[in-house]
Length: 286
Picture 1 (cartoon, rainbow, N blue to C red):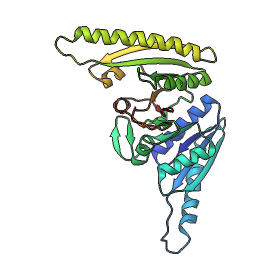
Picture 2 (picture 1 turned 180 degrees about the vertical axis):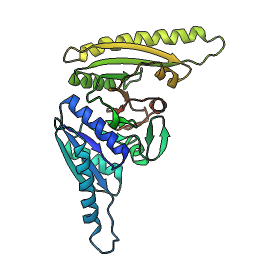
Picture 3 (picture 1 turned 120 degrees about the vertical axis):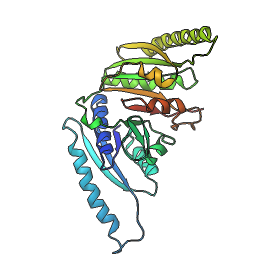
Picture 4 (picture 1 turned 90 degrees about the vertical axis):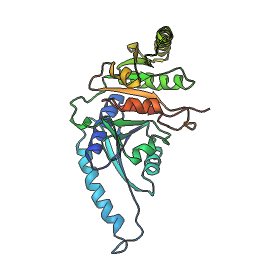
């Protein structure tokens, strides 16, 4: 199953290609670079719009493919759709993609090193396929493989499926898996004992996840657990050590429909400070 890059001829698109190639190389799979173009019904002269746009898109896609080293198999595809997000999902389903990669440096609301444009935002609230967002500047990274997979996981019912996705990814890439529990503790008078109890519960939870991950792993991988706390989630995330080549896997909000992604408020807060790619996993069946 290939990695699908939803491409635009922008710096954000180049970031997506770089991350897509890194993921494809690490997971030993191919790369599909796709452009979804808007159809046009009123053109002058009639009938030339799609032909002219296709010619331009083919040139853009050729440039995108040239960004990928020869050790990764690359195919390209152009399609027309009224909705860019729906068109990307259709393409992902057509090729059986296991992951959609988008650039986080396009237009839209700025979120830390990521800029979620309207198309990316739509995907983050509707895709049936996991979505990876490439931070701005990914194209300049000298790292061509995943270094480590981090999985932020809580105590909700969906936690096991997020854990399984992270374990599979780390095992296929042959890299370590770090399980993190992020605790937001507000300094409230008389709450010290309660906060300590919350952190201790998080440590116990993380230790249990480490054992579960080791049971799920199909081959020997390093699994570690870590608990960090801060005044809010952003503080906790900033206390973690990050390196170029890392990525983080998170689950969808409880508001997600079955087998769909819905970017939750905690994940959105993490995006404000993260400098590494985030992969959002769809919710499972209810």
